[in-house]
Image (cartoon, rainbow, N blue to C red):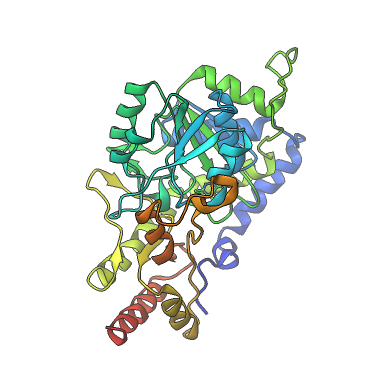
Length: 365
Ligand SMILES: Cc1ncc(COP(=O)(O)O)c(C=O)c1O
């Protein structure tokens, strides 16, 4: 059976290093916050070339913390997309703000930067794009819009750890870069974990205050705080995984290249600009009547996933927009199938998946 990820196989190979990190955590004597969290923050910041990095409990918390630190509150509007994980939009409503949905570019599934300006009102405070599947959004154009309208840019980088755009890592030069380290992510923890990058010292202090409930001197308390520290056990294990990142990225790119080479003539895939070196989180393909393909693959013991099937803009908690409101997003959510690029899936398994998909396309011509 080919599963999207085989954690057991993957981690068995580095078990001794992970056990050593686990011992270091136990013997550190610091089980909340402390040196290991600081070490992780320092290392991840240097890896990405970011000014500040602050560990937190999850990607969902990272987004909420960024929105709170940006001063977003009830009555504010945040422009985002509806082809993302629920948490992206949930974070906006969790701080009391209203999500405003922008459609996507059909060629790569990312926010259509040409349609953002039409969504801006007096209430707009933030643009919150998602670098979906690790493919970067058009940051250059979005930054220009933010500057023109004095908006804050919060990037959901959950899929994009290790992606470079014009030579710079995603999240390295952000108002806020929000990362999930959910176990399946490019930099995956062994439980819930996340972090935020920022180029702004004031935002860094604000985020720490929100995470720790109080300021650095422990005299001022913050009623909007969310108790959401990064667990030092996760930090200890993530330090090991960060050392494996360059190899893991090579492996992911190798798998994505294999899919692209084999499938681009047969099926719709996403286009990646020459300005980007993508660290792929998944390899999305698009096909009508996808359940038929998913069943065909499952019959040969290949299990694939969909990211994400729900039209978030149609949910009552996010505004109950009618179907047809975001045609490209809805098509994306209807046709997407995610092929795994996880290093635990071998190249020969990738080749087998490609062969089956080609077969399916030929049969259903
Ligand atoms: C795009 C996106 N945003 C946010 C999140 C939330 O991250 P977490 O699960 O760490 O809370 C995820 C995680 O699945 C995600 O894929």
